Amino acid sequence: MADKSSAGRRTRGPERSSTAPKHERAAEEAFVRGLIERGEAAKPDQNGKLPPGATHEIVEEVEGGLPKIRRRRFSMR
Image (tube, rainbow, N blue to C red):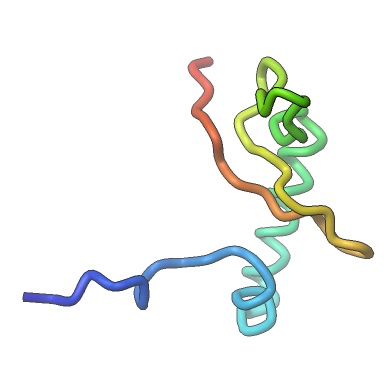
């Protein structure tokens, strides 16, 4: 039976970005920028809730770069 460890899983962040090909990094940056521009990525309020319409949480601000995000819910549009 095959091992279902995290070896085959994709990750986002500095570990992946430094080794990913340029076109993958560009696509990831465009994806994150699009989420932010459309208001689909936001910081949670004091109670930990995202605003209406947000599907991704901004979990870390990166100085001089794009923030790290995490999907929190799905949109039913």
